[in-house]
Structures are given as structure tokens and as C-alpha cells.
Length: 173
Image 1 (cartoon, helix red, strand yellow):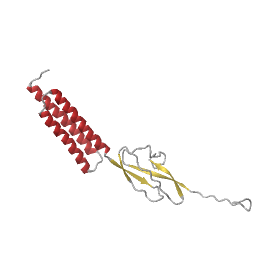
Image 2 (cartoon, one colour):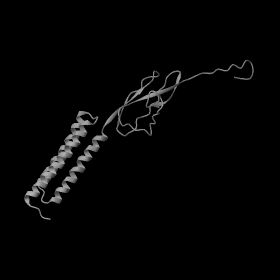
Image 3 (cartoon, helix red, strand yellow):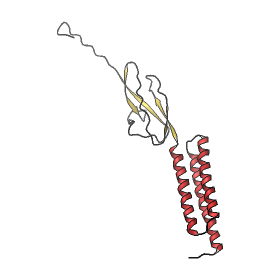
Image 4 (cartoon, one colour):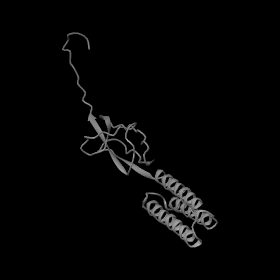
């Protein structure tokens, strides 16, 4: 269907509005992420570049179908940048030694990845795992549980009890 110049210009402005809204939403999301400011600015610059390139293509478009393709490509590019930003988020995994052993260093772990298992030692105790809660009810499984926010893991310790048997002259020790 043929449309007039007025309608075509409206289609261009509508496309710019859609891309601007997508850009603004993406930037709000990026700003809310737990990223270093420099990384945030890099991702925001990529989103702005995608918008700028789309606006330039829209200005030179000759057909409404071309405009729809530009919107789709800009949407894909901006969503890709947003996904990259979300995967760049790092969280802190801290370790509470629960009063025993040397402090284990905290870890920076990207969202959705695994923390690295650290097995501490404490004199007179054996280590029985890391837990998500201070009551030691919910064990953290390092090759299953992924990091999706800052978290503190709690060490579970068992006292080593030494039992000595005295043979009283019978048998061998």
C-alpha cells in the first residue's frame, strides 16, 4: 500500500520514539546494575551508539518496511548490550568463619557463575561445609549453586574428639 509523505514522516518519527523508549529503558536497567561506573558508562555509550545509528538509517529510509527492519535491528542490538551488561555484573561472596580458622578471602563472582570452593582448616576442628544461613541448615553446593547477588557463606565446624583406649595389659594397642 502506498502512503503519502506526511504518513511516511509520521512513521519515521514513531520509529524514533520507539527506539528512544527502548534506549531509555535499557539505560535505566544498566544504571541499576551492580557495575563499576566505568563499565556502566561503556554500556550506556553502546546503547547510545545503537540509537544514533538507527536514527541515521531512519532518516535515509525510503520505505516503511525498511523502517520496521531498522527498528528490529536496533532492538536486537540494544537488547544484546543490555544482556552483556547483565552478565558483567559481579557479586561478592564473603565467608564467615564462625569463630574458627583463618579468614577466607572474599571472592568476586559474575552473576550466574559458581563460587570457588575453599576448604579452611582450624586446629581441633574439621570443616564440614559452607552454608547459606547462620543456622547451618541450607548447604551451599559449589558445583550446583550459582551466585546471583552478594552473599555470605557460613562455615560448619565439628570438634575433633580424641578417644584413647587403655588396654590394661590385655592385647595390643
